[in-house]
Image 1: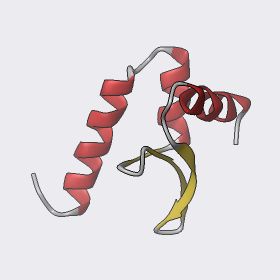
Image 2: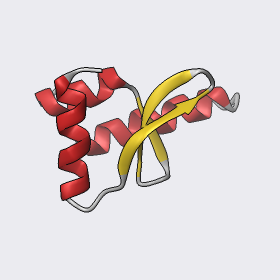
Image 3: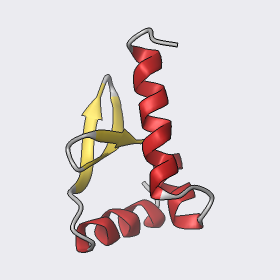
Length: 71
């Protein structure tokens, strides 16, 4: 896990989010507000400004829908 991921988790917690590591289907994710999972890569891109928090949430929705077999 990178320093960026740790910093992002700490930063989100300071802003009132509940962010922590969790394991899901054999992979470690960052769980945010008990409603979405983000990969370490997505969190690093959030820190780097590649994606906004809203875009990371949208990536989660798309991944979740795909896992459920929805288009």
